Length: 196
Image (cartoon, rainbow, N blue to C red):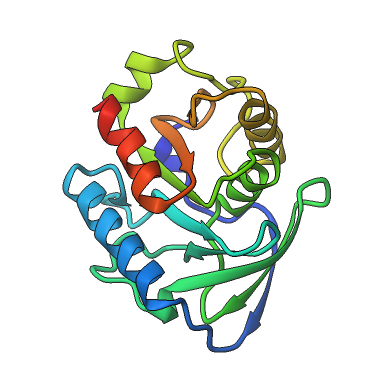
């Protein structure tokens, strides 16, 4: 499956439209690292308008902030461009969120990492063909039939993040896709920079 076929929400997303307020320090970190990765074209938008890459921050294990769907072309995220995920059910392919925008198409993936990796407070999902090819099956790697935004990918990320200390997972069925997670947004970003 090509990255050009991606970027669309596959889960049942229930958006409760209300204003959310991301703490300033978290919003600043999300924008700082998002802009750094955008410079390398690891987060952004394709020529056909499909966005790729996202960043989330865990509030309490069940709830987290995540960059909104189709925000890859936004230069600076505000509260309007962030969704607060309040409930996920991977088996039912369901995400409930608050805000003015739907949560990212990879929300179930982020949720699965938070649920299975003790201490994970941030997840960064990038696309980088060079790193994806270089580290395929050298770092923890998902099954090749676990496609983007799918229950299968969420379950693979849950399995791998529970059983590894790598904190980086290569998504074999999600072309060029890489997930990094850590106890802070800075650490999750630094994991990726070390690979680069």
